[in-house]
Structure formats: C-alpha cells, structure tokens
Length: 403
Image (tube, rainbow, N blue to C red; front, side):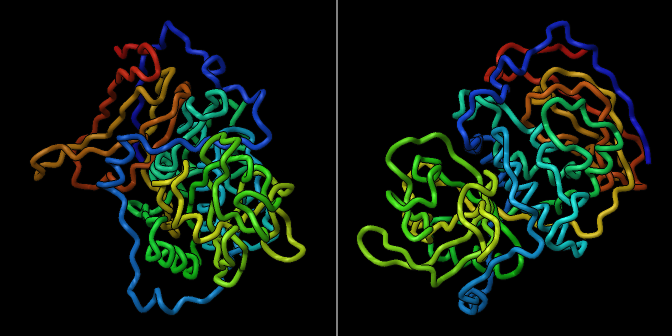
C-alpha cells in the first residue's frame, strides 16, 4: 500500500450548511429527496451505463410471481432527503452483500449497511422540502462504485457525527459495487417491464422513481389512483417531490380496478418510510411496501416520467490492496475535482483515475482514504495527484482558492 498526503490551506470563509437548508426541522411526515439527473449525470450515463438486455426466450419463460425477501434488510425509515441513498445503498447493496455472505432474515445488526455514509458525500440542497438536502441516484451509484459504504454500526447516522476516519474509508472500500456495472431499463415499454421482471427473477433488485402526491402519502387507502392495495396512477393534488423506492418483486395476477376496467399485474417495492406506512410484503409481515401497477410505469406522464429503472452488479469477494490517503481540507466537496495520475513508460499519455465522484456540499475536513487498487500497477513509475478547485456558480461564490 502507498500513501500520499496533501494539504490545502484552510479557507478564511466558512460556509454554514444548516443555513443552506440542511436542517431537518419542519419537514413533512414522509421525507423524499430524489433530484433529477443533471446534464452531467445524463452525459455520464450515456458514456458509462448500459441498457440491460436478456435473450428473448428468457423474457418469455418468467414465473408469474417473484418476491425477493430472503436477503432484504429490514424496512428503514429515512429522516432526511436521502431516499436515493436508501434505495441504492441500504436496500440494493445491502441485498447483494447479504446474498454474497449468506445473511438472511432476521438481519444481524452488524450486517446492515449505512445509507448515511454515502448520503453525506452526495447530498446537495435542492429538494422540494424547503430546499432540504437531496441527491440523485446517479451520484449514489457512482460513489458506491468508487468508494463503497460502511455498516450502520460503523456510521449510524449522517447528522452530528465527525467526518469518517481513514479506517472507516478503508472499511467502506470492501463494499464497492462492480465497476462499469450500472444498468438502465426503460420504464415505459412492455419490453422494459419484462426486462425488469427478468432481473428480479434472477435474484436482483432495482431502483425506481415515483412522484409523491397526496395519494402516495396516504397509500394504501383506496381512492384516486389506488385500488385493492395497488397504486396505479399519480394523484392530482398535494404534489411534494419525486422519490426513490426499490423494486423487489412482481405479481402478474394481482388485480385492481383503475376506474375504467379490471386490470392486473404490479411490481412490489420497498419504501424507506418505516413499517407504519404501506402494506406488508407477505401475510403477517411488516408494513413498508407498495404495489406499483405495470400501467403506472407504462402510462406515466407525471412527475417521475423519464426516470429509468436502475440496476448494478456486486463486487463479490473484493479486498482492496492499495489506498491513496489525502489529508485535504475544503468547505465544499463539489468544488474539488481530484484525480490520481501515473507515469507509464509505454503510454502515450498519463492515465488518470478519478478519486471522488462529483457532487456533495459537505466539507472535506479530515483525511480520507481512496481505494486505488484498480489503478495501481507495477508498470507505473510515478504517481501524482491533480486537484482542481472549480467555480460552481449554482452553489454561490467560490468558497476557497487553492494554493
């Protein structure tokens, strides 16, 4: 393992994140927080994500019902605008880690993953909840791929804790997702829904987006857009925000009436609003789940239109070997672009490895450790770190000049 230490001079101007809408007070009962992908996110997706496909025969031979519960963490209850982190990190990555290590319900606490470690580094003000901290799913996937996450025991809550130690960063790296594995599935085509069902039938989960109107807040009460526990259409009043949930199964035979005719077929999703909201996934089980009709996605012209289903692959048996340790200080992580460069005698240019994904307005105020095992080889003769201090006008005046 090699270590590199760099220090940026502390800023004279200190930015208060609480004043920027980071406080938790005065939030509605059900926090949300899903931000739409930025233009940069969309460009990154086009270049780095892939569209999930299956052979046509596999799409025709699917079971009529699949519910993935065996390795699912217990229903969580978010306190911030962190729904994307709960969907991607807590549920999807938590499922994969539990599946890899043979962990089944009831979950031992030491195996539950923390969404807060990732949310700390990807959250920005901008949610509909009075500007509360929120995040995109893309930023969560990118951070998980590069840095991983800790357990709940290691990092139990996002607010009030000091910055993670170097040891916590190193622990998180053992739970990185597989590189270049982010998958996309269209939500508004029959082929896309069949592809999602194939993913679920193969024992994996997917992240989805919904628009939170009053009828979603009040689910499963029958009424506008809801019948027989099936949510089939967004409401027309009380819109609050977009929201990330996690698809864990489906049932082709579940029935409901959409106001015009009897319909059938829905996906089962787990939410992050605790067990007092929603329905149980199985008879006698805990609440916290929602049935989302196939037609909800096929016919969705509402707020969540255009959000793909997203999948990722696990990095099974991974043990990091090389870390870059940076003692770096800056009031806003999003304003730093950090890369590790290397000299290779046979290369025409210096290879570059991005150390931290973009996004996040929390300060970097302690040493961090980034896993660079994928980048370091015996052929590299020298390494150096490139740190750029960016001007991001959407976040106000530059917080610091790097010297």
